[in-house]
Structures are given as C-alpha cells and as structure tokens.
Image (cartoon, rainbow, N blue to C red; front, side):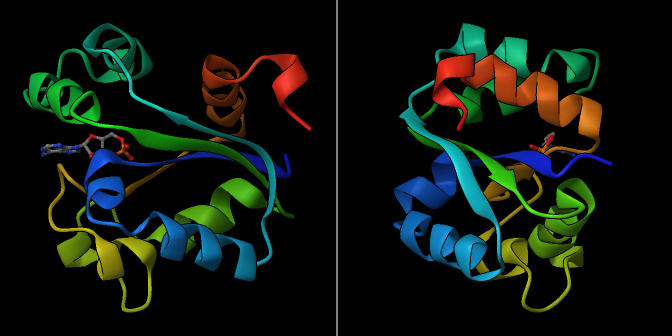
Length: 138
Ligand code: CMP
C-alpha cells in the first residue's frame, strides 16, 4: 500500500471557482500536499494522460474538455491515500456519488466531474510523474 495519490481539479471546477473549497476540503480531510501545479494542458498532453481510454467513445470529448482551461494537479499523502481519496471524491458519475463527496458537491456530469483521483498505487506514481519532476515532489 502506498501513501500517495494523484489528483487534478478539472477545468469545470476551476472555471466555476471551486478550487479553493476543494483544496480546503482535501487538507481538512488530512491529506498533505506533496506537489502542486496550475497548468493548462494542450490537447496533445491531455490525450497522453488519458491514453488508456483511447478506444472509448468519450475519448475525444474527454481530451477536449481536459484541455479547455487550466487545471490544478497535485500529489497528496495520507495513509491508504488511493482508496480513501476515491471515497472522498465519490463515484465517477456525480449523480451516483454519495452525499458529501466532492463530486456530489461540485460536479455536474460524468464528463465534467470536477476532480480526478488515481485508481491504483501504480497509476498514482505514473500520473504524479507525468506532471511533476522529482525535484517538484516534496
Ligand atoms: P477520471 O476519473 O478523470 O478518469 C476518466 C474520465 O473519463 C472520468 O474521470 C470521466 O470524467 C470521463 N468519463 C468516464 N465515462 C465517461 C462518459 N460516459 N462520458 C464522458 N466522459 C466520461
């Protein structure tokens, strides 16, 4: 079990002014921020990040959305980070997310779902390293 996960505050949440509330919630839930960056992804970089979904029908829409405005990328640390953070953000589709989860509170649809959270320790490392050099990870 790793104690780190990777997250993004997606363009919808950033655009709607929810970044501060989401970061505040994350910190209050006990996650330590180990890396943090505001970045506007190109379509090429968004496509690389989500390459695993390339064959899915929503891939084009996902890439266009994720490159539509700035995001905040972060590496977070807490015991059992990957699993606990996925509970905190809630189901991918906010309509199915539990009350009080970040997606329930801040997301509008499955495509524009406010935040990303890594789904495994292995992917947390791959995704964190996609955005941050070793020097940028505390
Ligand atoms: P995320 O957890 O960042 O990982 C993959 C993303 O694909 C997911 O969040 C959703 O935003 C997006 N996604 C999943 N299913 C759909 C769908 N049916 N339509 C559009 N986007 C989707």
